[in-house]
Length: 462
Ligand SMILES: [Zn+2]
Image 1 (cartoon, rainbow, N blue to C red):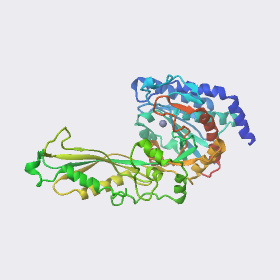
Image 2: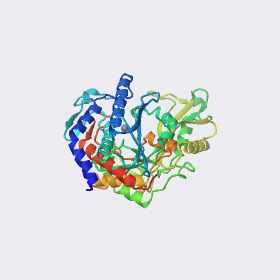
Image 3: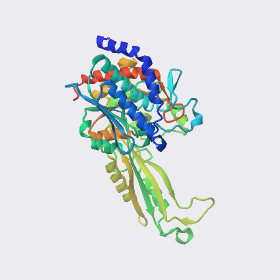
Image 4: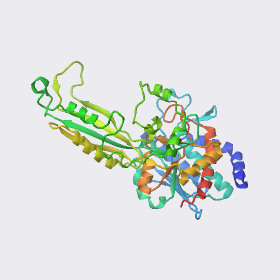
C-alpha cells in the first residue's frame, strides 16, 4: 500500500461510524418519485445530497430544476490533464407497497446479517452514497481529486426519467466529459464483482390487420374474403424462423459480432441452465441457433409478439370472420442496431408478407437504443483493475437483456460511453419489500471508486 492509499484507509476507518450514520440519515428520507405526496421528500433528498457535496468541497453544486424532481449537479475540474468523469446515480426510490410484506419499516434503516435494510439501500441511494463518501475521503485526505468530476444525481429514475433528456440537452455544455460511470446495477449472483458492458435497446410496434367493415358470417363469407386473423398469423410466422433467426431482411446488418474474448467472458459465467429453466417453468429453453443461453439473452437481438388479439374471445363459439386482428411486436436490440431503422425494416417486411384482401398498417410505438462499452475500453479496464484490487477477484462481465435508458441518452445526447459499475447484489430485493444492501459492498465500493479514479487518471482518456 502506498502512503497515499494508507492515509485514505486510515481516514476511512476513523470515520466508519459517522459514515454509517450518514447512510442511515439519507435512507430515512422517503424520496418516492412516483407518488405526488412525496414530492417534498424528493426535494429534501436532493437538498441533502447537495449539502453533502458542498461540504466535501465539490463546486458549482446546484439543485437544478427539470420541471419534475430536480437533478443535483456539481463539479470539480482542477485535475489538469486528467480525464473528466461524469458520475450518475439516482436519489429517488420505488414505492414501498405491499407494506405488510416488510419485516422492518422501509424508511427506518436497520442492520441485520451484515446488510442495511431500507427502501433505496441498493437501488440506488446506497450506491449514490458510496460515491459521496469516496469523494469526501479523497478531498479530506488529499485536498483534491485524481480526475475531473461532473456529478449528475437524478430524482426521477424510478418514474421514467421523463425530464432527464431535456435537462441533458439544456446542460450539454457543462456536461462535457470523457466517460460516464453509472452505479445502478448489480454484481453477479453469489455477490461476484461484475461490470455490465452492454444493455439491449428496444423497438416496439403494433401490427393492425383489417378486412371486412364489420365481423361477417363465416358460413356466408368464409372462403371468399381474407380473414384478418389468418393473415396476421401468416405475417407473424414470416418474421422468425424455427431456428430462432429473425427473417426480416437487413435485421442483423448492424449487429456488432461477438469476439472470441466476448464469448469467453460470457462462457465464464456460472449459469446453471437446468435450474434457470426450472425457475422459469418451461419445458425447454430455446433460441437462436449457434448461440448459448447467455449470448441469446444479452448479446443477440430478438423479435417477439407481446400481445395478439382479434375476433371472438368469449366462451363457446361464434361463427365469424373477424373485421380486424392486431399484434404488438417488439425487438430487443443490440449494438449498433438503430431502433428507427429496425422499425422501418420490420414494417417493410410485414407489408411484404401481407396477403391481398386485407389492409395492414404498422405503427411505431416506442424505441430505445442499445449500448455497449467493450471489455477492452480503457475505462472498463480501469474499473476492472479497481474491482480486482479492492474486492480481491477479477470481475465478470455481464450483458443485460433489458435497458437503462439513461445510458443511451448519455451516448446519443452527450456522446459518452458508459461504464456500468454497480455494487448491489442480485438478492438485494431492489423494487421489492425488504430491500437491502450488503454493507461490505458499500464499504469496499467506496475503496473501489477511489481506486477507479486513480486508475482513470492514468488511462490517457481525455
Ligand atoms: Zn436504480
